[in-house]
Image 1 (cartoon, helix red, strand yellow):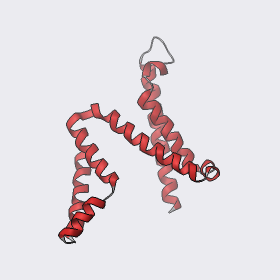
Image 2 (cartoon, one colour; image 1 turned 180 degrees about the vertical axis):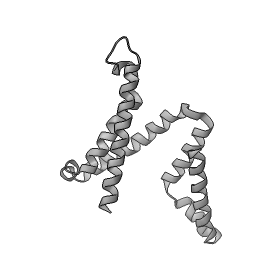
Image 3 (tube, one colour; image 1 turned 30 degrees about the vertical axis):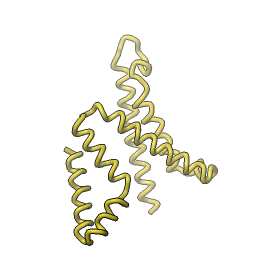
Length: 144
């Protein structure tokens, strides 16, 4: 349901932007629009068609894109990158997201007899990732 609402809102914004201009400007707007909007719209369509099977692939693509962004920020100024709280929160989210995506639950299990222990650890890591995302958002809003 959330994916459908997101797709409707993106298409509504595109239509609203296109309705205020002529045909040539509409084509330029469509071609020069944000690649992130295109990716989100394609990801929503893929998720609606293939359900959760495509989720790991989409999350991997997003993880790679954010990692590239963080590496580029690091290359610009390493000292400023290391001492910025927001960057440390983002690196923490990247590491936790990678653990959640690629580390199997059996290797996280602390109890050989209880197979749910690995799943419980992943749930706790996912909750901590949500808290880190919230903290990153708060620092972003507070800065602007």
